[in-house]
Length: 413
Image 1 (cartoon, rainbow, N blue to C red):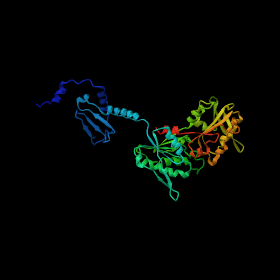
Image 2: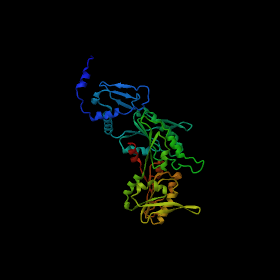
Image 3: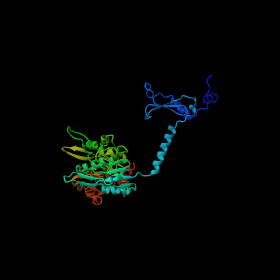
Image 4: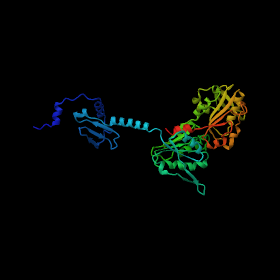
């Protein structure tokens, strides 16, 4: 007669306790089929000290099944479930305890004033400079001082693509920074300059907005993953789909800055918002829905296109014309004239991006204290186009609303 082992004897004589909720959950796991039941090669397995077998599909433990072989499984513990939860909570607690994310912010020559304002917004942002030089043939000769010092750091670059001439040298830096073993990389490009060239209307047209998006989509990934792109009030919302998977666009708006400024006006209770066309209304009306609204439209009369009021009444109101950008300013001036003709008490304007090629900002005059037919009370722009800011500073009716606060907040995302 074969001898009975102590373990077999214990199993015969000791009644099993009621299964715990955890062991019940484990029993459900054990009833799951293997991921590939037709596999002929045995799965790798691990026998634990208390008799259970863990079989895995691969060494990476991507998929697994628990198979019970002895009655003592009621006492088994599945360490991976509670430990995973514990690790997640511990990680969240540690992240919260670390406080604000520290960011090394690089900048180009044009954006230095804005970069300094951003750094003044938060002690967690440290400015870092780049040596911008050129060779005798005009091509960039660039240097990143103390490149090893940013290893493991969160890094951002504040760009200004004001002309094709400066894009190449900045792209060289933008492509180099993620390769310096940094934790993450953020590109802040307040104004996406080719936004108005986003579609083809005739065969042969080139959608340069797509070209620039494709160039930015090939920025090398950092140790933290794809590059984050922060930009404001991009001209056409569909342009977000032009970017590839190597870049994560973060679309911000300058409208909150305008709303804060309007609240400080002495006639803040008498403001109406005018949109120069349906495109501006679609883009911004949800953010400005608490104000009375006026919508203008361009209509054709013979060979001319003139601006008409499509809906709303400006009479007696301080009317603020809102759009995403201005170039020559012709549409805004025509809109101003028709609003004044229909009885607006004051007329101001806001655009996020004041481009003003060929000094076209000079077309806008100050109203000299309540003459809306002759000029504007205020013309608000942001500092997304640094060269324009330099030209219009301290020139009425212009007033600059800085993006420093929103950019500082975006760098903490």
